[in-house]
Image (cartoon, rainbow, N blue to C red; front, side, top):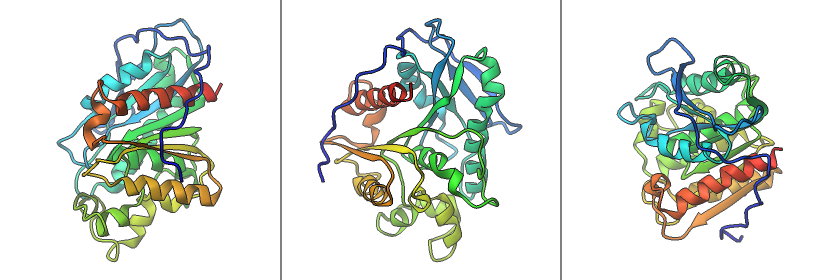
Length: 279
């Protein structure tokens, strides 16, 4: 399989670049962490594609949405509305975390749409996330396949595409092969102890999802193995899903929030290309 960077389509003229207005902070639920920042391009367009941005940080309380502000602004400057969300996180909070990212996404149709002045095109929604946020964004893209009792099941807002940066797609693989201690802390045990939680939270377990997923990963990532993205894309394609793998030579885990890196540029270009494809 060719893991080199594929050519990106030319962005649609409908994406009119413009500097984003300062973000508007909005609550989507009752908890103190149920809020997000809405970035709107100041381009006069009355119908905007929108991306839900989900930050990472190992599902730990000490990391928040702040570090995703610069890349959210950069995407909005390309003519795309951005909803950069916060959510409950911490050891054992997995159901609250999943419920929160679902609620934040569903709020696009209500609170967020109202704040945008009705400018959001809810038929052109995509999701994007980094690291643990990559797991959550990929989970959002596939949550419509979950059983009715699961958090996020039967959603109204269905993403059309997903851009996943150094994401954790297979939680059991991360815990067992990657020796990732944050995954068992988040899910409350090892795979043999709480297998249902691993199936619920692992995006790879939801395949096929019928959503285009682009997995971007650096081959020098020592935090989340590039094999997470490789295995997911292989499985997605085998299931019949459209999936694309972009491996960045020499890129590490943190390069996705470095505006001078190839990881940053590739991510912004990929999100923009997905938005153009949805026209």
